[in-house]
Length: 446
Image 1 (cartoon, one colour):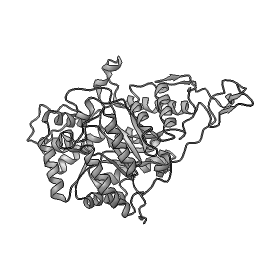
Image 2 (cartoon, one colour; image 1 turned 90 degrees about the vertical axis):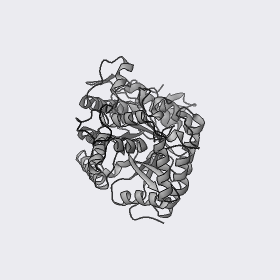
Image 3 (cartoon, one colour; image 1 turned 45 degrees about the vertical axis):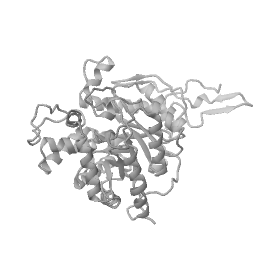
């Protein structure tokens, strides 16, 4: 059965302690951002459900008041390399900061992951939402928003140039002739820019996908331009259908202005589903989570998303007027609009944000969850969803075992993988090698 709107894409956004701040306290929940065995079961459940990708967020700082899933966690590229050998089809996407990384090392890490996984790697590009991270990298300040995005654009340009260090057929490995590499097909980047100076070439061959899938989450005006110009998969924060439709239309229009095919950009807003036997059962689960919630870390989560410390404001009054956020601008805009639209107090907004980290919350029967996803997809608001279970593994297993079969029956989601790479799953083209980089290091094979 096919659906007139086509088929949606699904990602599993994995936080080991769950997305709800109290998810780890639910009966049967397993808290384990450092629990490899749990993470293996989660990704294998995603692959069983034919998900497009498994996604790991990251930050390079921590504090006792942060969301439990974010206080301690494994480095994502190391973790995904381990998970690559536990799976064969599902995509592997990791967050890595352009502000607190080096282009050569990061290009090498993602190329390695793409080789290890046979073409399943994706890079979620962030510029760093937490100013506290600067002190961990011998920096005396966190760069301002516009500067971070300008540096990120150059960073990605350098990474792509490094991935093109070798043409696709440069590795000859001919025993009879003794030619291991055709060095006429090796290119030196020799990049000197405003933020980076990188000689190259990269000491790893071109990734199986050409480039790992480029993932982006910026929603500010600058972030939207970056997303439309280089992004291939967009993770977004949307609470309202009409706002989501407007965002998608804006991104697609900007993509055309940048000379890109808008169908080569896939938009996946985050959704936290709570699946129950019916609406009342799902509501009871949500209430149980709320009763387990710890107020300090819950308010910290909201403060991080709005970009301001809210600890000094009265909880039972409306959200105060705040200056624009310098961090998670998409979250700030969406949550501020939600609070005004629903006339929420600060306490109500805190509790809502704690449930889904600022993303859309869906609760009800499996059919009601499927209806909520179908409505947005068919309306053209998105190309699929980044699923954010409130706890693991049970809430995710509920979604895969009860909601996914409904989506499949409606023709909205695949029943089997038809490709092997993340680009295959997303319907994205493999970038051709430009073959126009600097002159080769050597002129003869050796």
